[in-house]
Length: 240
Image (cartoon, rainbow, N blue to C red; front, top):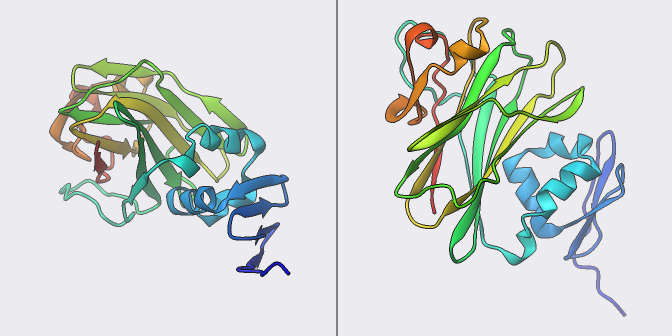
């Protein structure tokens, strides 16, 4: 007779069931998750992400081969902001970072999640600073998810020690989530930052920055017309 080790049922808009110690079934989208994949999603994205996760979203995660990899995740408390004087910061967004490493490279994923509806919907900036490492290849992807679906964003600015991407937030709706995935060489440290514009700016203005350890989130130093525009959310980092 087979023994049942664990059964967990959560009733939301859909149900999640741990069928056994190895498999989790997400019934709304008919997606089967391993227990390790499930834990990765909960820690990096949050439980609400499972309610709307599509097959496309799962395939994005499946590419990481989580079941056969060592995973590390760090999440920033959304109330942890850098002291910015007169700049008013929100506590409506959070950022997390994960790494999955092989012998010569690591796959880094950073996720910025809006917990509420942003008032300003202009060009936010998200990116990385590298210390003692660099990009392993040119496979850099930024995905913007909202009620309108998923789109890729490619307003990149590359510098010697990192890069940023300017992301225009959708004009309406909640459930905004932004993901960046990169491949970096092992050795060194990767810093990730997401900065929200507190007023409307042009794409050109959003690219007025340098990459520096003294910047917002240890990544972005905004200059010229972008100075004082962004909210200064602290960053996250991982050794690779």
